[in-house]
Image 1 (cartoon, rainbow, N blue to C red):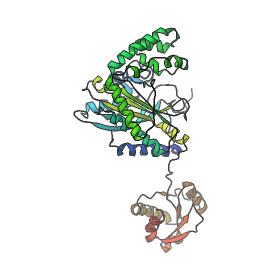
Image 2: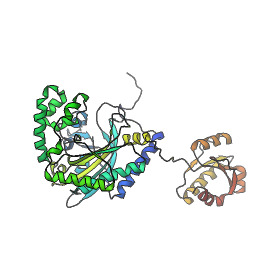
Image 3: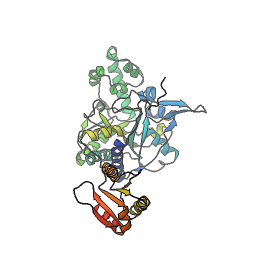
Image 4: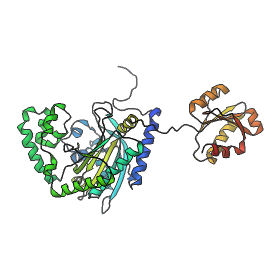
Length: 423
């Protein structure tokens, strides 16, 4: 047995070479959702297992196969969160956020599912999650979709398309369920093992089958849109009208059911062909019955979740590059007594020049080696403080990204000079 330490399979390190892209994308998405009036909520990673059984549904792959669940020292069953919506609802209920109030919330962080790791699908993965609770009209559904469309536009992502559907009310789905049971029972000898089990427990799950051998059977099944109640049909028609008015193109996918039990009426996915089989990047829908299902008052709600890993991959597939956050200046100190003054100078500049990014040469070295480090840092300028410069009260400013000549500036004029040339 090897004693070599390693990362847990499917739980990856985000290294400095890519973390800048993550930070850029996360901050861009955060700025957009907050411009629509959504506020951040931060949630624990651990919840009671019962929360996910009751919200997601016991007859789902997530609950049956994928959750990281364990007993704590008191014997209570706890689960690492596999998704964020249930936690948002639990937090809202336990903290009184939904009592005679409407909430527009966002959260982000790691989620956990035990499944076979592959490109775009990991055991620890990151999501950005947006929820609007207390709103019952199609206008908020449209806002959430339009807001996500603005993200793609802002990030230059064009290899993506929107699919929408309506699941109607639970009562309408009951009639649809009967039609599905009748249809799939007639072809039961062609169903795979998972679909046979779901036929008895939740036949809508068969429509979500990833087995390619089931594709033709699923395509021939009845569609939910033919069973919609009048109110849901009007809701869906109004949503489409709002998307049309906003110029957001979409296609209606009658097989889109989403993978969680709590959805009703509007469901949608942003999908791409640029990431292989992992086509869904941002998915969501309406879950009007979830708060009541978890013990609260009937409360309408809608939201979406987006995988950060898939967003990063799609951003790069569309040619996106995050702004580089290199240093503005690199300070090189050469000779006796210069290092102390260089450290003091760096702090003075941080006080006087707003937003300046300064990297100090650490570990000494010759002029040549310090200039190599300065160039590697990506800084625009090197500030050179040698014994002669120190004696004369000056500092050398050497351009690193152009052929301009080095110049000397008085130390008391340095901050103003840098503020000017770094604009």
